[in-house]
Amino acid sequence: MGGMYFTDRGIEELEKRRGDEEVTLAWLAEQLQAFVDTHPEFETAVERLATWLARLDDPED
Image (cartoon, rainbow, N blue to C red; front, side):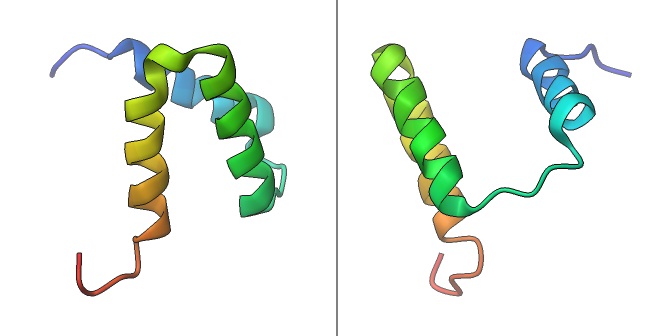
């Protein structure tokens, strides 16, 4: 079986620490914007994730 990627550990940590919390998508958007403001080098990846999440139920995509 393949190795675990660094991001997999981050996802697991997020689930472990905050998995029982409920948040709004507005809150998530604010956090993503704050992250990009602090780490502009990740803007493209964050924008792609946000677009993917926004279009999950879009039959056109």
